[in-house]
Length: 102
Image (cartoon, rainbow, N blue to C red; front, side, top):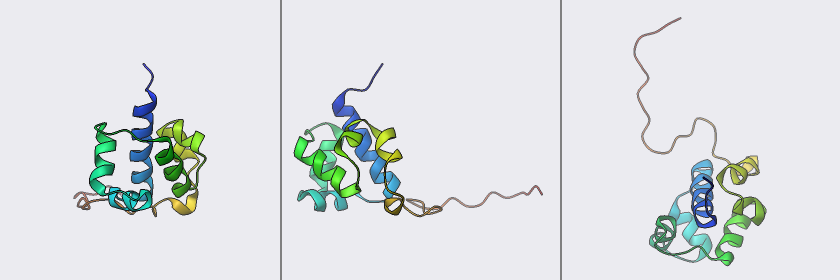
């Protein structure tokens, strides 16, 4: 079963936020809306407009058609300079496992 366009946009936004380590607040500032309004769009309560899609794509340095293609394509074409540093994790770090092998 394929994803509808609205779900593809929400998934692409989520994937780009994750890949860059940005928050909904940062994206809201780019769009000139509050974090709550971004959240409403991400939950499907409000719709992402075509103007929003163009602004999101421009912010991440990708073509709007790649953005609309969905999360896989959007993150594949995301410029390396926009990606969060490897090893940077969102949220608390997990403790290293005990025990060794080696």
